[in-house]
Amino acid sequence: MVLPQRLDLVDPRFRADPYPIYAELRADRPALRLQLPDGRDAWLLTRYADVESVLTDRDRFSTQSFLGQEGSAIPAHLSNVYMLFNEIMLGKDPPEHTRLRKLVQKTFTTRLVERLRPNVVDLAEHLLDTVFERARATGERRMEVIADYAFPIPVTIIMDLLGIPEAGRADIRKWSTALASFDGSLAQAELIVASVDAFVDYLRKLVQDKRNTPAEDLISALAVVEDDGDRLSEDDLLAMIYVLIFAGHETTLHLIGNGTRALLTHRAEFEKLRHNPALIDRAVEELLRYDPPVEVPRARIAVEDVDLAGVTIRRGEVVLVGIASANRDPGAFKDADSLDISRVENRHLGFGKGIHVCIGLALARLEARIAFEVLIRRMPELRLAVPADELELRPGGIFLRGLAALPVTF
Image 1: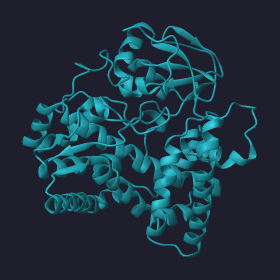
Image 2: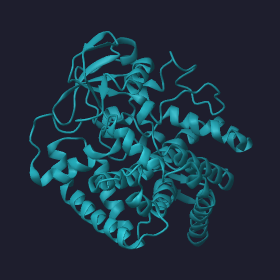
Image 3: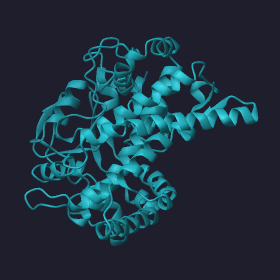
């Protein structure tokens, strides 16, 4: 394969199957210079060791100032767009990141997540009950995995957990879809600003309502949580709610969707899991490795000159870490391009690593385990309804990679 002169991360041809190009880059150009949609140049790192190094090096790489170049003016009418994306915890370095994470962890606990297990099971079973009822009525044993199953599970659970009223959920889903397409550029910000402004207005009112009348939900808890007198500011709280809504369902949606596609295109692995459900924990980790929902996480900025992957990354330059590529690095994984749900050694980077490791990983794992368990148990004859190469991706900027739809028969 001949590598492109200028790799475009949002080119549909690249996004359809980036793994062959990633393999070439790991072998020949593990640090590739490219241009971001917002016009800035950046380095893309593709080898596991380099990606892991950047993710865990909080001294030489910062997550601050990713969106909008330092010193550049952001138009006032786009302020909410950049506030949401820049004020999230992922965009903070210590000690501010440490402060925010400590506050959130006081409310978003492992015990809280585990209490959600029966809710997730009931929801997964109910969604498939609905599919079977429709099949009996129409005579067609078909479903669309994304719309019928992979999307409703995480979005319903995170909305319930946060305490989002039913009346606002359809709007939030619409706004979230718009936000998923954001690539950091002013042009894209203009396209989604109306959705973001409506989202922020909705959140401000919701937070005020929760403060006036607290309930047994995560937003109410976040609004009042304290640590030695420290509390979340309003912008902190809005950005935190946004990232919990967005990351709480978009990433898990794609984990379930990408994972289902992977199992259906590797029938032996599907059957292995069907006949040995005890492999579910390893299976989820392998699906996170094989085709992760987060392809390239939030960029880093070098805070000093760094020699890495055979190049010198200068202070102030933008660095992208290719998680999807690192997870297929043969230097880190045996038979890296093979799906093996019984894989034991699996230090994948699907949830990131270091201080910015995904705060919701326990919830994502719980939802994915249950989603796959229920789906495979109840639909053992599941098959793709169209050729795999006809499946289309959902718009996701440079960060997320997942399916727009996944039609199947059962």
